[in-house]
Image (tube, rainbow, N blue to C red; front, side, top):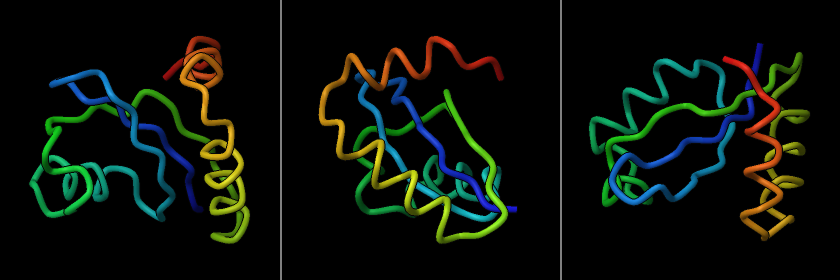
Length: 83
């Protein structure tokens, strides 16, 4: 399985949108300061994720969410998600 996920920074409440095969391993990398684009705002929490059969589907959804540009749309998506 593959995932599209949204992280929220505990430091400044910013969001990061990504896709991966293993959410727990990826979160470990983000919080372990191993990801250049996110280490500045660590630590992170997973606040949303979707599951897909193929990586291409997860990447497509990642691109779709990133294209929204508006924080309010991302927050609406997260609001209706239960972990």
